[in-house]
Length: 354
Ligand code: PLP
Image (tube, rainbow, N blue to C red; front, side, top):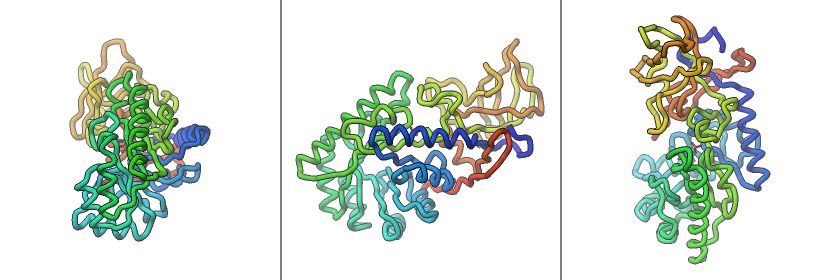
């Protein structure tokens, strides 16, 4: 890892990022499925550009602020996969954005459709279906009710989408979550077909399920995390350890009796942690060393007897549990190729969470 940058910082392996982008695109091309990567993972115009150049049909975002950022940079096909509540300020911003690019937005309620339709007439919308994560989305049989409300409100229903986020429940949930995505989208397509509505998009999406749900009625996939991979994806079998492409470079700033302290605290690694995943990240070159607890600026790593550990002042590479919230804590990503920093990718949509 490079020595000439201050820690803590984010370092991407440029070759691996490119390989991850290509691998997913090729896999989707082979299956005849459109790829619309979720840009919340990288929030970077440079990386979105690489994904679009590789063949992505557009990008997915989670907020209006992200959509504005990518649209300003020239991304013209943007789907906000989120049931935005189009209250006054957001309605003005949505109208302005929809005037500039062919925007698509998620909806999942009658009230949300009415609000959105009052804000922007003729906007293209996709109905979110809950395939088992139980976050946003309606059960498939309710898709028709939301579609009818959307049509009444002057919106154009062009598709249905789901996020099989329950794939993250544990290592055994991935296959069933992918099946759930396909069957929930199929049932929703049928429900809309029965009311005479023809749609062109059935969009599934998560990194663990992407390759498994790209079939049947599904026309589009929206994985995001695949671009970097992380400790969670490796645990779920969705990334090989040698494909992980984003790391936190940190320095050992303290040594205790049975622990060491790194300069990458919660304001670097975030505290995101699944109940089944012990710790907050692992030290790449020191097998057996895991970040056990986090303070704002300190990461505490227990050092069991007999386990090789770095010395004070040494730099270490940490593999984060979940890269998406980590990226949102940084202004830039250093790009390394063969151990040299060759580029900087700004995190353009950092903090654009509204
Ligand atoms: N689509 C939606 C609606 C999401 O919420 C997410 C992730 O949170 C994704 C796609 C991408 O999933 P992943 O992070 O597993 O790549």
